Length: 268
Ligand SMILES: [Cu+2]
Image (cartoon, rainbow, N blue to C red; front, side, top):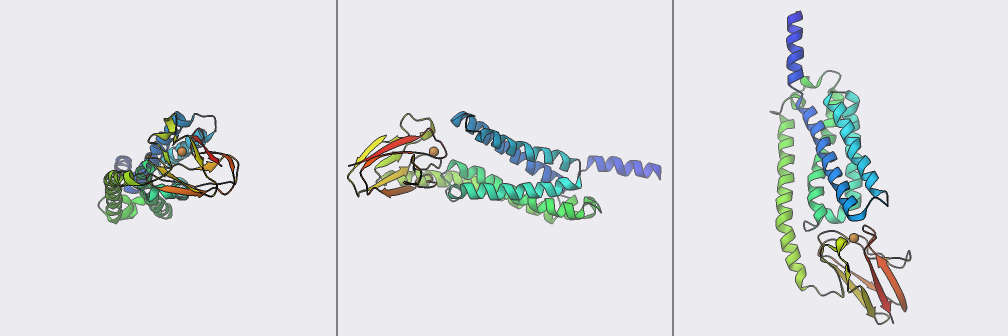
């Protein structure tokens, strides 16, 4: 009897239930991608606005839950599901425009993260429900050769497919923007460009429309420095935005995602 128990314990130590691999692995993946996003933001914008630190928290929280899920703590399963639902809402709400555009750099990030969050949510809830009896009692939680394993494989395939489609789509979309007429271009690599909106100062007659086109592979905005005058919202790669200026004056504008990007409109 004692020998049997010893054997089952050691085999249990070796073979983690499949669900634990998915939950912990998915959370670690989310943490790595979010941390990469944090570093990218730090390089582009600096730490001054505090966004970097909130990014960092978003990277550390899933890592902590991953550790406890790996130790097969029941609460960590449901915590993983909750944090992934929150991440899903945040990522989709803030980047929905980029999710629809394969040419946007954020597309690849979202295409990889959104299915991961969904998968961890499903496994987190199922594991939480079955944890008292033990995850090893349910085949789809215990073994990779199961419905759960197939689902995971399908998600991994979907992510890879999206990344390939994104790579192909981006070159097509960027080629198609070449002929689009616009007054002001958001230039490639606008975040590090000396003149992100080209021309930096644009003069128009009163009542005329002004069109911006985004030629960068990142989404930007055209937002008046004086609040409430005009705001394009997210303009993704290859998209245009048009504003009409009905009052004379000098209008300064910037990008809300990258505030060091600025431009000027003079209406005469
Ligand atoms: Cu920007």
